[in-house]
Length: 377
Image (cartoon, rainbow, N blue to C red):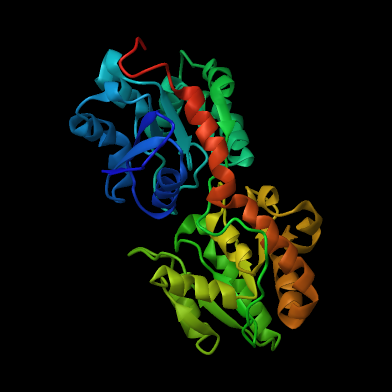
């Protein structure tokens, strides 16, 4: 368990059932930057399905006295309803933060859909006093999908849940771990241009069209290098290993870059960061890369139109795989022509630093808190 220093007189418990990856990044940032006193209790980042089933019971077992907290923060990879029921009348008000949701999350190829996880998200949102999503597109997608999801029930459909959740839901974009000042310091770009992939090596990040775009520009004789970063898992999509055979001279980094300073160095050398994701509710990896000078080349969907300044949508957001290839080829052939965009976008990303984002979270926590621990819930 970790604890922030605090300074507001308010004390919160943050229970994170999947303390790894973007969940860990968010939890650590909130604890480190908040003016509230936040105790962080996390579980190892594995067996996510079991976390949704059983994390509430484990946190209940570990929690000595909930009455000392003014509120509880939880992310949605657990059943907040189970946790709250176990705590009973002693449960402080809860804020549930949605990094993702299991109603709109794309299922891996060959995997069956288990609708119980979607219902867990619904009941977690219903028992929370406040529900926050990490982007407007995420909130909108979740609420839009609810009626069809609920419509699958054979009878006694809880159609009222959509309006009940909407009344308590809001958006608070997460912070990122980089300096909040807006100055752009250009670094030496790699020549030939360097393409960055810094996403998880999983099906929802849709790597196939990314590698197809690399093959297409390579077939045109365009010179480039590629750094394939991001976290890899045992059952990674086959496109990654196939790429090392197809692009042996172009791929200069293949695998997770550690320590963090090495990862940042790759971003600083990058020319363009590409996403072909099917699921992206915020996009920390893209924001990080853009902050350090990579041009973001992204699909015109998901959260990406929210995080990229509107004046660059036509230039850097693509609508088809063919358009991805054409825009990528132009960036690789004329990187200097994009230098003004690179500078402007890098400066704009400073708004996503924890320095600038923490005020919204602290305001949410203060609104959540009651007059004192142990009061009537």
